[in-house]
Image (cartoon, rainbow, N blue to C red; front, side, top):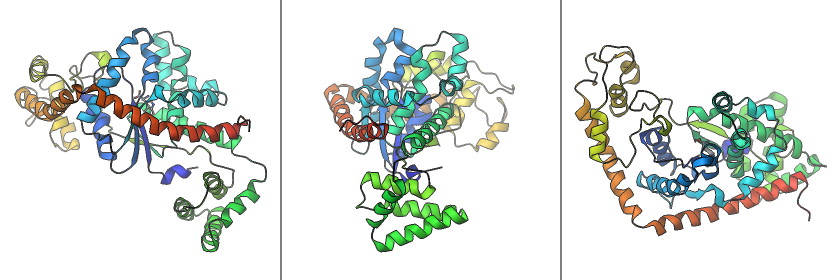
Length: 393
Ligand code: TRP
């Protein structure tokens, strides 16, 4: 069941610093972040520990990639004053929550995750790689995120996160005298609200009215004078089970379209088919001009695929439009494609250059953001430890 998260305005997302950001990152995720930053309370971070799960042998690229990534985010429109920007490894609580959650995670849940199954067949896989979706769950649950903007390939990880949260709440959300405590908490809302809550709870419990559940949750979110523990109790009490300590997040799908790289396959660093956000005009022209075109085939060539990203063509229409058909761009369109990409990247490139001249500013942004994130993380951990019987008061 959905919980506090449904109403939560909190968004958490991250990228792994494994190299230069490219158009795939920009169109796939980053543009979406820029939109979300003013609508939600956003926590965006650089997932440096996640980078180690696949790049432990080439970890020397991580540090530079961290700073370049933050520069690219800001150059692309992320405003440090509007969001909390931080670095995962500056918040050791992520590691602690990962460890604690690992105790309740059936190994088979991790073994069944598609990214693990796929890679395991190709190469030897480490303990860290097996566990990384759980590390991601910790990243998300730490901030009690309601929404997690991710690409399609990450949906299984959000689903895992939901199951872990459910399991955690089920095991540790049960307290002695739960009902009495919930009733006591209710009194703190004042007579009128308490009555409203009780009626809504009854309507949901007895009649299954989901609208009543939503209204009751909204009512709880509006309560200013409840302690966090009481709010969690009352959220849990609505559904009858116990305290909701870690709310379940939702995936916020960024873009269903896969951004094609220079070879027509998904753009990714490992496929060496990228246009990076900092490629110069000359490099972009060179890359596009050297692309093969394949008019009149059913599979669109990379020029057509990239062109689609920039044209406002109706996606249904362009689906049917094979390469070489009227209106397609693979043969004559290279120059205009180069123009389109350059127009988009020019301001980003210039801003990134400016920002690169002041590395101390970037470090300060990350220091400040990490400190703010850590405060939230400390609170969550305190509650998690207490629920698990590790508070030693
Ligand atoms: N695993 C994500 C990726 O590879 C990055 C990531 C790490 C993330 N932690 C996260 C994304 C938390 C969203 C929320 O792209």
